[in-house]
Amino acid sequence: MQTLVGTQKGSIYHLEINRPKSLNSMSSQLFQDFKAAVDLINKADDVRVVVLTGRGNHFCAGLDLKEAPLMFQFHEDMDQARKSIRIYDLLKDWQLAMTSLSRIKVPVIVGIQGYCLGGGVDLITSADIRYCSEDAKFSIKEIDLAMAPDIGTLQRLGLQNANTSLFRELAYTGRVFSAQEALKLGLVSKIVKNENLNEEIFKLAELIATKSPVGCYTIKSIFTREQNLDQHLDVMARTNMAMLFTNDIPIAITSSMTKTKPEYPKL
Image 1 (cartoon, rainbow, N blue to C red):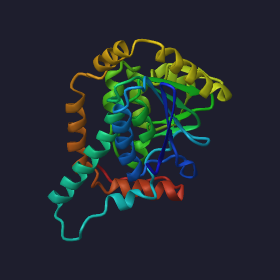
Image 2 (image 1 turned 120 degrees about the vertical axis):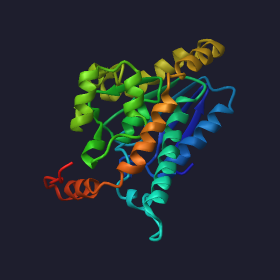
Image 3 (image 1 turned 90 degrees about the horizontal axis):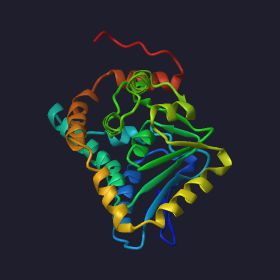
Image 4 (image 1 turned 120 degrees about the horizontal axis):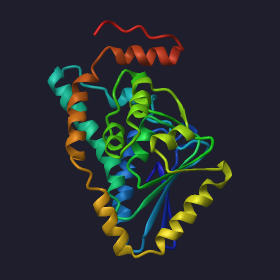
């Protein structure tokens, strides 16, 4: 795996996002590596808990915008329908990478420090338990790219009894929010001192690892049967296979890069 590092100590498997120079942003390789890591973990009968963290100062800054244009390149002869099909296939592949994390057969604990933006939020909603450091900053960032989150945040948090009013405010505005607001939203269950984050999540992992693996497996299998999640994700992919062709997206990206206010045409 090029973008992830996995190490096992006893019955705990530590999975680390390893793109610190890019703020652990999500590349196409990272999506593929997540699926490969999950396959590897699920084949190991001696793993009882998975801990997910990001190397460096930040957990994950979302989609790698430097690579994104390459992900959406099409042959010049493709018509709109064929481009839409390619977009749908790409989104389903990304959704599968995030969903596969939730389908790990043992509990997954994630520790979040620094930035957790856009796709980073999609990712952590697939974990069982989420702790963050006091300095953690979050954003459901996609609206600032003129799009809707399409690989899990809207669907999973919507099914996880999030604070609905706050959730919608954050999705519509894309504003950065603090660890305290993440706790209020229900995105994390505990805030710890920056220097104690790893200690706290591994202490929790060690406790869970002492419990019956059959019992934990059974609980996890029930928790991951979110009602109609697959259908909700598919609706999102089919919606964005058309919506991602809006001219609002290049306007938003240009505005972000030039630090100017975007001017969007009427609906």
